[in-house]
Length: 458
Image (tube, rainbow, N blue to C red; front, side):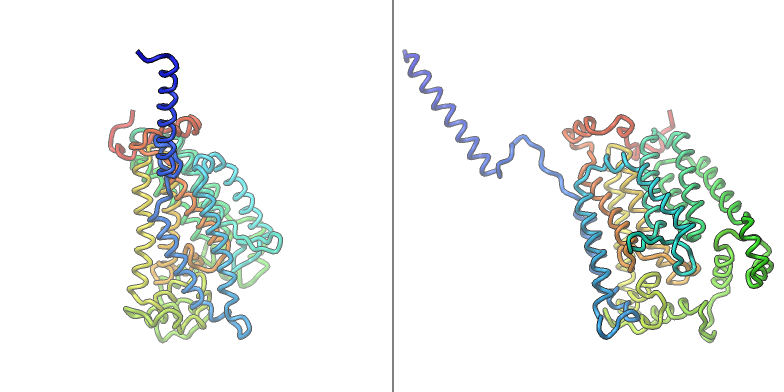
């Protein structure tokens, strides 16, 4: 029969061996708790697409900036653009670590700030390419329309996510969302018709993603069309006075037979010229210069292109480094390169769809899809303009065209997508679901019904 002293000694030996064994196992496992959940990482496919777009941006912007290059500052345009790419990369690295819930919480504040900047640009903005769309702050030029587009998407995602129900979105969410789009569209109207159409198209896509019934979607479309018609027909007293004081403007209005609001005459002229088309034997004018040289650049590209940096039309094509950079990409890399770039953007929205489908909550699903749709729609509009499918308009190619505001804003959109991919809980991760219930407010815990949109609404 062992004594009490021997029993205590054996217990101490057993405890010491257990502690040593756990410590050794912990050292082998990198010091982590064996029961702890593995740290989630951001989606590698989104990261890969983003890095590819940055590489293309650096190479093609250098090729397209020959008109800006001087003998003493050959690399200056590339350096300036590189600084904004680095700032954008910093935004992506920072946002991917922030839980998407914080982004959704501040969606209203972000939208309000962007709306204030947008209003200021309409009254005290700097005119760029014929439109009053930028403001100067501390020596920097900021384009509020680019910020407003992302702010509207984040706010829409939050509203639709909070009002998601089985079979669609509650009527309250549809009404609020439509009002948000109309308010942003009102102030974007004077900055550019393309931006207004773009935000309306993105919102319609988000409504479809949310499973809104066709009848309600048709009502929203009618409201949008009515709003655009009212804005087009209305003209302020000041604009009427300007029409009678400026002979050229009066003649333009008389020929169109309609009033103007913002840049209506410019849009009508562009649409008319687009419908008329361009003949190869037409004389080159300021009105058709971009269209003609963009088509020449794409024709030079052929199937495989002239090679990166060998563009011949970048010196003659206006805004080759921004609004028409896709034509330079096609000239350098040919039809194949242009198709690959299009596939990259489409892959981005496809990957976002996979992530959204896996989310158990509606808010992150709308966030990741809204940001992806915004990026891809803007890319498609840019490509359509350059290839002649749409009338001439200024729309940068996301993450590639020169423009600090656009690069940073689109990088923020990528950061939000990565945040969702990293922090949003899936049905397979029970621990993440419990943590999400503890950290998210009640109105952000709405279930994602993406797998059951066809079920009747209760």
